[in-house]
Image (cartoon, rainbow, N blue to C red; front, side):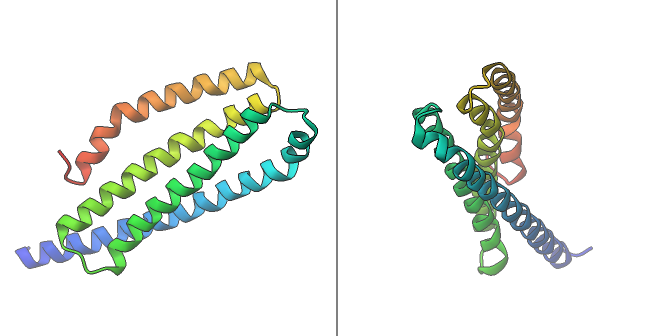
Length: 154
């Protein structure tokens, strides 16, 4: 395989990965918007009547909004790899940005169930969900540097 063939193959691998990441991010944005809509539809009336913790409800909604933003930015950083003329350095920087926002989005998305459970007063199940999130966060953050290394960071 010649150098130009290798470069062409890397270009298509980057485009395939970027396209797959855009699709994944779009799916998760849609799912998270559904969770947001669910929270507003079912819990906002309870918030208005004072039957749930108003601070916890607002924190939960904020986490959901930040999750939507993180997955949207991850998709954007992946999308631009396929549509903008970029050299390999800029592509790698965009892939690192996409990976960072993906990690933030997944950390926040996995936290959402615990917050929702605490908001509706299911403390025991919420504590279990929060414990599971802590384990997930520790495992994810342990490997975070390796994710960055995949895209050429140091």
